[in-house]
Length: 138
Image 1: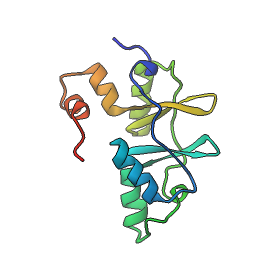
Image 2: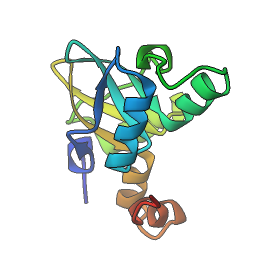
Image 3: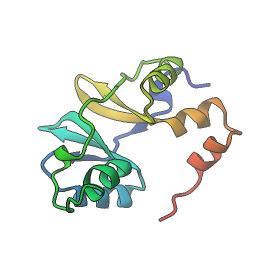
């Protein structure tokens, strides 16, 4: 059984620079079959952008696909390190109501752990684990 975030995280998550347009981030999400990308500024994480962020902070506000990622992303992000325990990651997700935690080492993103990753690990028979393990619906 996994003990740390490093055991279950997705390594080398999709990243986008903060000055790129949200259309580039959306295309990356599509191509990588993911609902979130890490937003970097000069190689260091400065936020996270989800498909929901694009819908709510860009489309619903009448903004276009050229909107810079930095204007749509969540800049305050809870993050963990690879040796964070699975239990601590679960507590952080609960207490901050987040579905994903970037995994940082020396300020650089080395992975991302999602609610689905933790469900697969802790309760593989759950509906969330089944959905998370299923092939994407491109």
